[in-house]
Structure formats: structure tokens, C-alpha cells
Length: 600
Figure 1: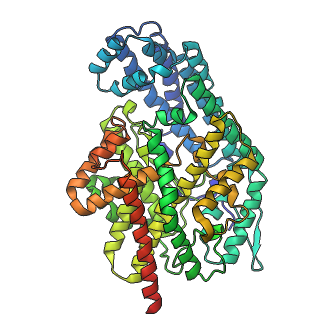
Figure 2 (figure 1 turned 45 degrees about the vertical axis):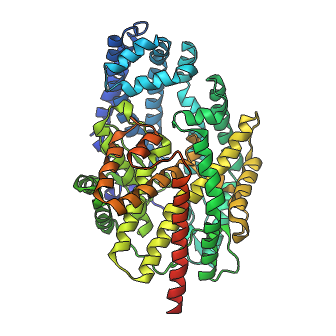
Figure 3 (figure 1 turned 120 degrees about the horizontal axis):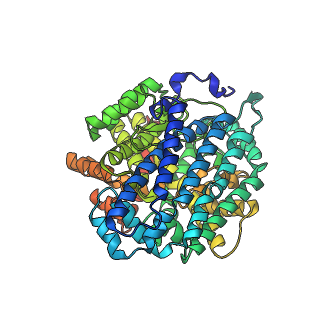
């Protein structure tokens, strides 16, 4: 079925951006305030010499940041659901330019603070709570601060520096038009979301593989422009790393995450080595159950039991999620009901809409969740995941200054993946039927763990090789990127899965590559979530209360500190190794249940 235009989508399936601003005029009024406050802040230039004046300036900067967050989200989110809407794109570009101009003019704040005597900065830290995190980061970044004029120029170029991601999204969501494909004598429509949300899971191998081939063929037509955008992105990262005096691009990209290179490498190396045998076993089970002559890359998303895949309406999903996450308390359940009732979620499937899912939580407002609803239980897990982000930022936005809500990406996927595991634990307790239990376990393996510990982890392994090339002074083109991706896939899957033509192009499918070292953090967050969910199962309310403290802490703690508050030590291999064994145990149980079901 052909996707609808955005204007033809039922309004009840869309999110309500009037929760940010009731009208565009209200947004423009705040944009005007933002501009005026920026000019007022320029008056602090050359005056940031005492603790009192520093905090007075930062109080106003905090107010400006809050306005920028609201204006930016109101405009940007409208684009995310319809890249064909030129008026919304123009408005978003205009607001981005305005904010870049303000940022450039105010770049002196951080450079002047970094040049201040450390004793003055520490006095300022001691006399504030709301600005403490900002000042602590100034002290931390001080060795990497550039000349004020250089910082101003970089701030002015902010929109240009993010151009590669915009080019990628334009090519993917606006220019890339898919032709129909044929399988078994029948013609099928094709699109990005149709492929990733439907055809990858289709139980008919003829349809599934034909869709993969057609999808890959279209991607290949855009491989050079996508590679050019990505190479520009990674070269920019390398240039900024060199300018700021980091010894490597990895150190630069991990700096804001507040984690060590050891923690980064551990996730990639241990999972690649230790998880691969378990996932190969799972792939062989899929091949056996589906009676496939060979297991190919195009077959990895199919269900163990495709006939046992309950259809779930949006209304029905509400009951599942409220019940599944009620362990987190009535306030959390109330937030979930509010998300449905006040249209926080964009469920629609339409042309020009971003693929995948995300949650945006502008400070002082609710959250806005993007996904494409397909009436599957997998969508319930996706929504529970995104509501995990909503619950996280609802807690920290209420408890912290906006300066203390930039949670490290190393940790930020823990609350979201935690919700998927809580949903799993809830479903497993609802009935004891073997087929149902196998379905729940295979769902969490094929979605939660596969998505975060395989798909994103292999993206991270590929990304690490790209940055190694760039760090050594090289560049990457489409041919290089495809070769690296194929090698990563072949190493992980071994002889259990045939890496067919088109598999190497999966580097073209993720926007995460334009967000620094983000892909590996999904497995990092899920490692924490797995350990905390096991604590909750074992210890109950005490573990839940600890988790609530973590959600409210925001960025007042680094990832090691946040995990420690939840009772987990992520400075060692133990949590990750235990999580890998947990996945392996689930796969073993799925295999055992399959044998028992087939024997009955």
C-alpha cells in the first residue's frame, strides 16, 4: 500500500506540537525574546571577572538555553515528520541560523570563563547550584579551549558543521524514491519504512529477499553522495580533534561522554568475541525452523514463530505498557497515560517521515515520540523504549537545571532499554504456555538485544575502523566503507550466515554515524539496564527506588557514577560478560522450547 502524504494522515495518529507552542506566532515571539536576551548577554563581554557577575550572566544564559530548546524543537520536529514540507524546512533553517548567530556572538562567555583564574571559577561553583554543572564543564574543557575568535568562528559555522547530516537526511528521506518490486508474480510497493518495518520481517523468503535486493539496489544508486557526506562528517571530527589538542579523534569524541577509551573498546571487543557464538546459534535455529536451504543476511530479522505474532492496536498497547511499567510507580504510569491522551506520540506512516524511532524532551514540556505503528508487539516494545527516554528526561528535567540535563550518551540508552526488559519480565509472568514464553523470549532476543547488541554494535565496530583510517590521516569512500562493513559482518556471523550482496550497504542506513561515537552506547546502556532489571527482579522496591534516583540525577554524575548509584560497577568486564551470558541463556531456552514444542 502506497504511503499517504502527511496532509492525509488522521490527526489522532500525529503528535501535537501545540504542547510546545499553541501557535507559530507564539514561537516567533519567543524567538524574538531569544534574540533580545542574546543581545543583553553580549553586555557581559569583558566583565566576567567575579563569581557574582559570572553567575548573573549564566542565569540569563540558562534562560536563553531554555528558549532555544523550545524554539528548536518546535521547528525541527515539524521537519522530522515531513521532509517534503518546504515551508517547515525553511522555518527550521531560519531558526537554526538565528541560533547559530546568537551562539557565535556569545562564544566569548566560555572562552572568557576558561581564561579566568581557577579560584574565581571555583568560588562561582560554590555559590550556585543551577550553574554548577556548566562551570564544572568549563573547568574540564579549559585545556582544549581555543582563541576567542576561533571559538566565535566555529560557533558561527555551527549550521555548516552539521551539514553532512542534513545532506544525508535529504538524500534518504526526500530524494530517494523506490520503485515497486515483484515477488512470486505479485507486485509490491517499496519505501524505507516499508522495508525496515515490514519486509525485513516477512515470513515469505521470496518476498523478503526480493525486497532486500530491490532496497539495496536503490541504496547503491546513492552510495557516492552518502559516502561524501559521511567522509565530510568524520573529517570534520578529526579536524576539530586536532584543533582542540586531543591526541586522537576517539579521545575527542569520548570527551563529552565522560568515559575512557578502555570502556569504549571493551563494548566492541567483548561483544564481537563473546556474543558471536550465541547469535550464530540463534541464526541456525531460524534456518532450521524456517526450513531455509541457506541462511542469508536478509533473513536475520524473521521471527522464530511468525504465526504467533499477536496484532496489537494502539489502544491495546496502552494497557500492555501501563501494566508492564507500573512497577516504576503511579507517577510513571500517569506519564504513560498522558503520552497517549495528549498526543505525545506520532504513530503515522507517511511519505517524507524520518525512519526508526526517537524521543525528544524539550525542557519544561512533555516529550515527543516518533515511530511508525505497524500493529505488532514489536511496536509495543519500541514505544516502551521511547517512553523510557521520556520518563528519564521528565525526572531529570524536573529535578535539575537545564545545564544538568545533558546526560552522557554512554548512559542515555539505559532507561529506554530498561523499559523493554521490564516489559519482557511482565509478559513472562502473564502466562506459562510454552509457545507464548518462546515468543516473548525470542522477541526480546530478536528486537531488544539484536537491535542493541548486534545491529548497533556492528555499526560501532565498523565506525571504529572508519575513524582509525581518518585518525591516521586517510579518507573514506563508498568502496572503502562497503568493504569495512562486509568484513565486520563476516567476522561476526562466520559461516552461520551468508553475507549477500547489499549487506555491505547497511552503513548507509543509520543517522547515528553523524552523532559521534553513539552506536556503541546502545549496548553500553543495555548492559546497565540488564543488570538493574535483574536487581529489580531480585530485590524489588529497593532497586526501583535506586533507579528513580538515577533517572533524576541527570548529568550531575558521569556514567560510572550513575551506574554505581544503580548498584552496578561498569569499570570492570563483569556486567558485560554477565549480560552476554544472559542473552546466551535466553537463546538456549528458545532452542529447548522449540524442541519441546516440535515434539508435542
